[in-house]
Image 1 (cartoon, rainbow, N blue to C red):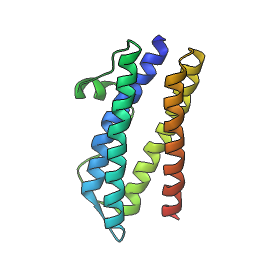
Image 2 (cartoon, rainbow, N blue to C red):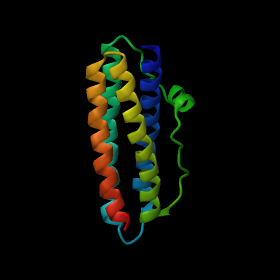
Image 3 (tube, one colour):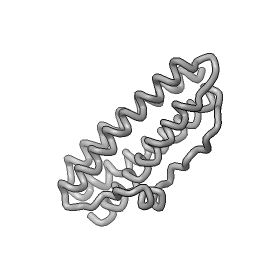
Length: 145
């Protein structure tokens, strides 16, 4: 279970950084698709907020300790922050796509680890995240064409 706790904390840390990063692209987007991207990025950070809470609360339910500080999250996170600068709508969508690809792979990896540990509720939670990222990436790819 130690490996599962490590991976879940990585996920929590990455979601914490992603929450702020999505606000960044929400605020700094510009271009022909401004209105649509502004709304989309808001939808994404609302979802990340819910996901973050679900993972952290699941960890607490199984006697794990989720990272709960910005300092701790930044030490663990693999998702990189973004500078405060304006960016074109499609360029910022590419930034989000890259990070969602990362979360898709992380969700799949944690599903496997949780299943091997006999933690089906955590595996089920991650399967739901996998489905979410697959759908989001399908839509992002369609927008980028």
